[in-house]
Image 1 (cartoon, rainbow, N blue to C red):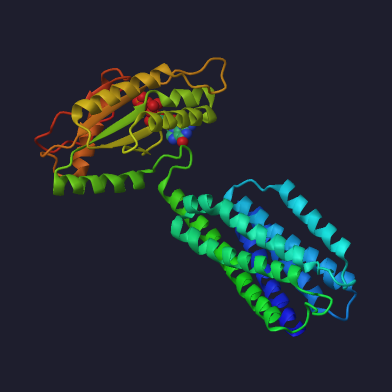
Image 2 (cartoon, protein in one colour):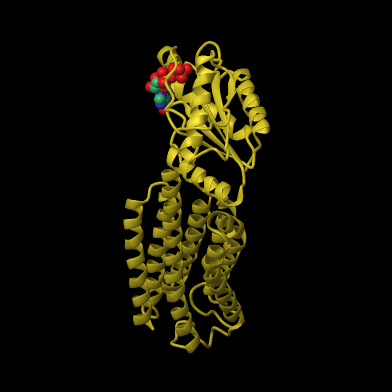
Length: 400
Ligand SMILES: Nc1nc2c(ncn2[C@@H]2O[C@H](COP(=O)(O)OP(=O)(O)OP(=O)(O)O)[C@@H](O)[C@H]2O)c(=O)[nH]1
């Protein structure tokens, strides 16, 4: 039994080593990773103390060991809550830990007569409660952040092990422990150690898997989004445009593109500095996001150039939306930290897909041409592109 426990303890140390490596690699999840590292270290210490029974001081091998094991699972819980951005419920955890400690001290490490209850009963009850409560409270966040299937995979082992610990708590409470010592090599004790080894392996693998999933999600986001505004970047919006183009060709589903360019943006940078220009870009981005429909997509395709893709939008409605956007942009001055908020205007070119469009690039050139016409006509206006019968030349930049 003690060799088996020492093996489990060694297993925990290996996981702890893996989390140390994880701590070096991951950035934002470091606090959660530290908690899981602590979980494995405390489990190793707790099981190490248990493995010294019956030779060691029973206050260490029974009372302290149980408290260390209880603390390990509270760390596991807190790490999970930090990782999923859920409340850590520290008051509840402190109360549980204090109750567990009070019970262990009150009951003592060795049988004192009939009715004596092994301190492990409270530890098992605490672990069972922590795992079941954690599973219940995190199910929504897990499903939302990683999908329902991943939530199932992550929670099933916690629930199973939580139930096992609940049963264990009940078994210890109802056991006449003055006769049967819990550290003996009984089949149920051995089974518990094997289940614990398996659960620890699954917990650690599941959390590592979740960390990798989150890192992958963040990476995908970075590849597709503009760092300053959070809008889609050129690559991502072009992918959506290509998809829409194929839909139009195959099913005749129309769409409209809107090219927006802020007016005299350089002057904002020159007068109030680059951070002020950045603030204007961010504010424009959130305005665009707010003002378009949820089926529309907004991308930042250049310094102060934006592109809006409006699927299923007729030219008349697109012109209306563009006019509204232009009006809202002008009506909402941006606070750039100067004495007065800065009024920002934009020029907009709108082009709805036509049967005369040879390819997607042709359509985009028409939108660009309309935009530059808006600039040439004095800026702060919307110009809708007429259907082109021939190729559209690359847009010349209008004189300021
Ligand atoms: N603050 C900030 N400025 C940027 C960014 N990207 C590009 N710019 C600046 O945007 C300015 C664009 O200037 P122009 O292309 O002359 O356009 P404009 O001043 O808006 O003039 P018109 O479009 O003709 O009205 C340049 O000064 C770029 O340095 C950015 O991410 N942040």
